Image 1 (cartoon, one colour):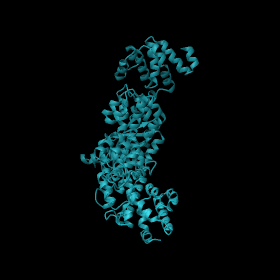
Image 2 (cartoon, rainbow, N blue to C red; image 1 turned 135 degrees about the vertical axis):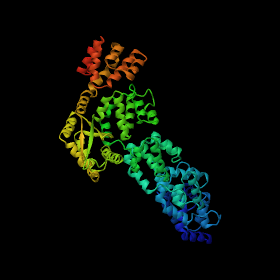
Image 3 (spheres, one colour; image 1 turned 90 degrees about the horizontal axis):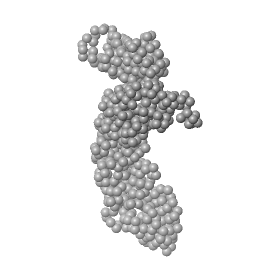
Image 4 (cartoon, rainbow, N blue to C red; image 1 turned 180 degrees about the vertical axis):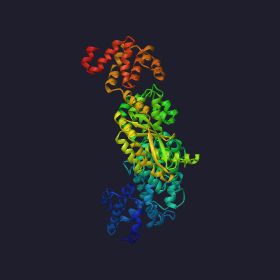
Amino acid sequence: MSTKNRHFIEILQKKYKLLLRCVDPSDELLGDLRSVDLICDHVTEIQVMETDAEKVDALLRTLLKLSDRPNGNIMGGFVAALKADRQVHVVNIFQNLSNKSTTMSDEHYNVLCDKTEELRQVLEPRDGLLDRMVRDGVFTRVDRRKIIASSKKRDVDEMVQKTIDILQRKPDDAFETFITSLNETGQDHVVRVLTGTGRPPMSPEHRQLLLTKTEELRKYLDPLNGVLDKLVSAQVISEHDDKRIRGASDCTRKLLATLRRKSDDAFHALIKALNETQQEHVTYILTGEGSSRPVSEEFRRRLAETRSKLINTIDSHCTGLISALITKGVFTDDDHKRVVKQKAEPEISRNERILDLIACKSQESFVNFIAALIETGQQHVSVAIIGAKVLAKTIEHCEHENQNHDAQIAHNFDTELLQYIRRLVEDSDKHTINKLKHYLSEKGITVLDVTEGCVEITFTCKDSSSLAELQKLITSGKLSSLFSETFCARFADRGLTSLTVSIADTEFDRCSNALRDLKLMTSEHHQTLKSSAEWLLDELTVSDDLLDKLSLFGERRQAIKRAATREDQVKTLINVVSRQPDSAFARLLNALDDTQQSSAADKLRQRSVFGMNDAYLRKFC
């Protein structure tokens, strides 16, 4: 063995661990080694190994094993290949070619090792960082491709790991370039992890909160309702982040994952964006602060259960419903744009979007949605969702009726009691309140809202059976006892001994009438109208007299009258009637009879009675 070769072998043995961590087994290096005698036969075996560490270890062991072969210049060929691959910092271990190019220092190498887990949580390799590292000659284009390809599903954690692995094999000055690139790409919170300077990354408490609340946030957080725009404007997320989030199948989950990699400022920016986009109920989920609450699970469940019927029943075109929702603060400008994105869009798509938006709103917005339905002549839709409303009043009984003679003290007491009873509307975790809610729910009774005025409570009864149960609870005094057991203990030190819940007989009568008269149109009648639209074009004439008898006024009437052609008027009329209560079907038949259009009325009657039998319809029509 030559003296020079022996020198190389001694260094290899002495610096084995250092070489193991800094040699980059790139395709270029291994490709050049294919032209080196003896080692060329081992390159293929080395190249197919899974990790870089395994490849380097196999390469170094092979060099040691073959170094004593006669007439071989294996080490010289290895060094030449390193030079060709621009791994000068590795060559300098054997030959001092440049004082500036040294392997990564133990300090920098160890900090990358020690902080790997934290870096996997906060580092974002994309969005300019890798490009800058390539621009500054630290990473090659091949390095960049390796990092991007390290995760087929674009798992950022895997990309981060690959970035660290490659960086640790670079010269020591690569570390400082990395720090500079992080600052240039708005990741000074990552610099904080590595150097102790810069903004702090998201705190473990905030990161854990975003993680543990993911399921709940996916129900209620609406990133597309202005939140993303505000986060981009505040430079909390990048334009690349914004594009990825909007393109994801689950925008909320993607947003939360993105925010967890940001600085702690991002959490506070999210709260600010939520409060500025009418999503204070989401703020409450994250902070427990504020008076707004998410719509209760009970009403979300009812929206889901009645969804297929609601899609075909809600009239969002001819009633001014969208305008009412905007006026009441239920819908924002962003909501409005999404709902009426395309005027030619099928109504079913519009109604689906409305229901999706309502399901992620606050309880107050849900109550206002119900009010908007009623105001736009769609009380039958509200009954289908929540049942009929029954207004009750509560009366407080205290040990000393005059103890709250001070007006301010009395007001504070009433406000506290109101807020506590209002938890019946929320998804409260308090056992006694949940027990009362569960008891009422089993009987088909739900609390929709709790308002001021001797603490007014709006119950809903989904059917006549649940209405009868509520009436029993009132007349027997059972409901008053349940309310007293649930709420008085909290205010025992204030002298509250009992609560009386009262409901006027007229409320029960009104509720009973609503349940009877406001049933949704049956599927038979709905299908009859829809399937008859084509032939009714020739049979039916829309006149003011007919519209009067159908009690169609306001925006519904205007929509029908504005239709461009006679055929469009008929189609609009049928669409409007099909979305009304079931009683509207009989009213249409009577109105047709009264306007000398009995032929159309008779055909509709026959279709309703005999169903959609094609053979019969061809014969009859």
